[in-house]
Picture 1: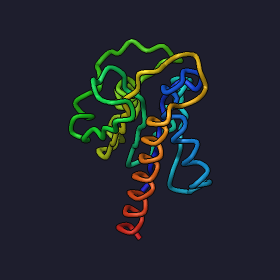
Picture 2: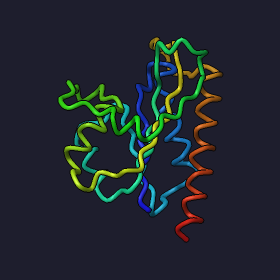
Picture 3: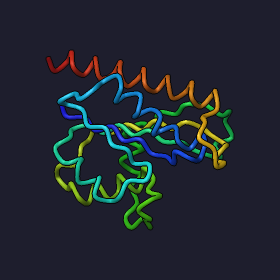
Picture 4: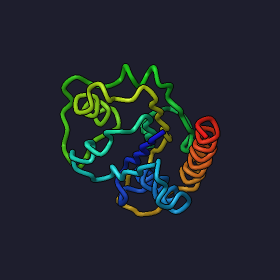
Length: 161
């Protein structure tokens, strides 16, 4: 099964960079895995979405603000909710695409090839100041996401192999 993992965030906006942190660590751990594509959606342009063609699974990681939950709280959004989330005509600026906008455009680009297996990990943040360091609770939540994804990919590999 081809899996695309997409990390969102701004690497110079403190905790907003958590999606980028997670995919960088996954790149280190997975290397050039033939069935896994890792996309940095931090400041990526629209054309990155064309790279999703041929993937049966998409995993997204992003920060979420104003949740009224403690910083570092991890949310895993069920696929059914994600499939309802894409907007029909989102306003997109190429350097500020969020996961729901990415899914909306991916659905339009991929059409019948749009995968049913989509998972979104969101991590509560409150610091988006111009800084390059992650706070401890957000980094810990990112490490938890890394382990969850690695565990799931092992399960997927066992089921298919």
